[in-house]
Structures are given as structure tokens and as C-alpha cells.
Length: 149
Ligand code: DAT
Ligand code: MG
Image 1 (tube, protein in one colour):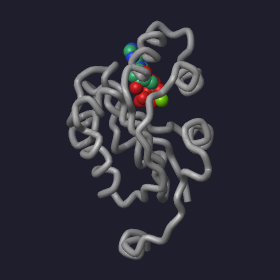
Image 2 (cartoon, helix red, strand yellow):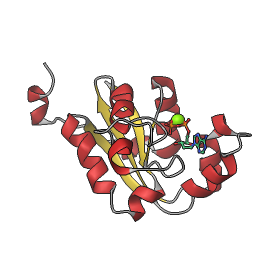
Image 3 (cartoon, protein in one colour):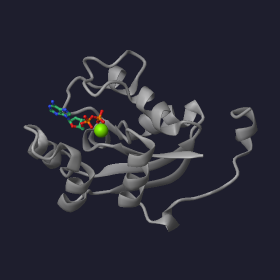
Image 4 (cartoon, rainbow, N blue to C red):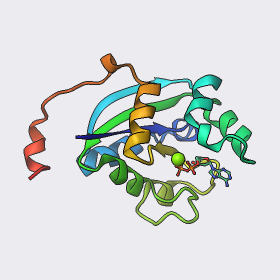
């Protein structure tokens, strides 16, 4: 089953939206298998956002993501990566569709509440960057027979 990394960014924690964001993913039927609050340090931030190194917004992005605690989560489910990306909405909240997390709850590109891995390959790398294997929980969920055909 596919897994993906989700971060409720510092703006989401500060605004008291961590629970609301978690609930949206949970209600969709995705399965939570890892969860922790953490402060991202500069080294992890640089590795996580390496693809954006050198871009004009890079320094601000690193400063933002390290500015306060985040809630890090691993979600599992069928096509979890693209399901989470669609629930998140477009990167720029002004372009995100209503009904999505960013489209309903955010206004600014730099304060867009949530990170989700953008491919299955990136998800594996990001999960390893943020979680130890012992922090991931495999368990049976009785509701799964009402979620998965
Ligand atoms: P996403 O978070 O949707 O995967 P991304 O990986 O392209 O988007 O960018 C990572 C984050 O960087 C994004 O959530 C917000 C910020 N960002 C991206 N493009 C930006 C820009 N042009 N100006 C300011 N911040 C930007
Ligand atoms: Mg991205």
C-alpha cells in the first residue's frame, strides 16, 4: 500500500488547524501510521527542500519551515500520494479549488499550511528523512472493509 509524508507547517500549528487538517485526511479513508510534533532543523529543512535550492524563495522557505513546530504524519492508502495532493489543492492557495485544504483555509503562497510528497519516490525519501522505521505503526483497522472493496 502506498505511503506519503504530510507536514502541517508552522502556520497550520499556530492557527490551530492541525486537527482540522488531520481530520480531512482521516475522513477520506486514509490510514494514519505515523504522527509526531517536531521542530525541523536547518539541516533537515535543506535536505527536504533541496529541489528548491537557489530559487528566489528558498531562504524564506527554509526560515518559514524552521520557524516553529510542525506536525509530521505518514498516511497510507490506495494512491495515497496523489490523493493527498488533491486534498491539499494547488501550491498557491489563490489558485487552489474550494473544498481543498489550501483552497478553504489559506491565502498566501508562503503560508500554505501543508506539505505532501509529490511522487511515490519522493515519499519514500521524505518518510526516511522524518521518521525512524520504529515510529511507523502497522495495524489492522476494522473500518477498512468498509473503505476498500
Ligand atoms: P508544494 O508545496 O505544493 O509541493 P513546491 O514543492 O513547488 O510546492 O514548493 C514548496 C513550497 O515552497 C510551497 O509549498 C510554497 C513555497 N513556494 C513555492 N513556490 C514559491 C514561490 N514562487 N514563491 C514563494 N514561495 C514558493
Ligand atoms: Mg513540493
